[in-house]
Length: 181
Image 1 (cartoon, helix red, strand yellow):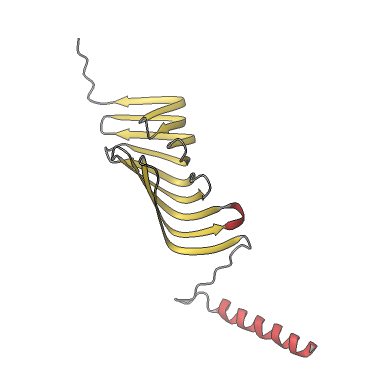
Image 2 (image 1 turned 90 degrees about the vertical axis):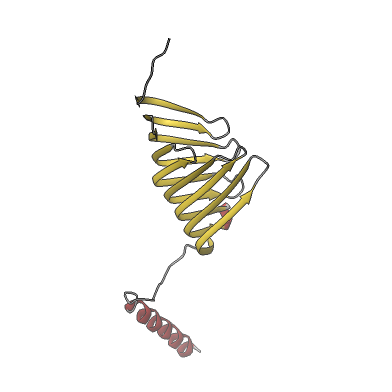
């Protein structure tokens, strides 16, 4: 019995070494998943129609579901939110974290949000809270449209009210200014 068990371990090691030695070859893809990961999906696509106020859709190159935390880790995320008035917001970033219970999303790495009316927001990380349909950022933020460029540190943007607050270090450049009496 001991010899059979030892033989099984040796065979398992040999198979592992064989696949590791070939991992540089095209078509071989070995991935070690965390013990917490319940499921991993490539080309992730999720759509949710909420109350009458919102529709949202998330796409990612890959997603890992952490069942114990009710979280989904996303790589190369793209999300689209549609407000009740039909205005859309596209969110892109390198990494994302979706909280299944609250539907909140954290996105980091080259984060860009664009609106259907031409507004563009750039930051390194942000959090979207579904309960108030708001985007929050703690770091540097740049917001641009054809006539204005705003920069600052820290921000809250309400998608419902279309209201943005920059918290500090605010600078603005406004083009096409016209003063009328």
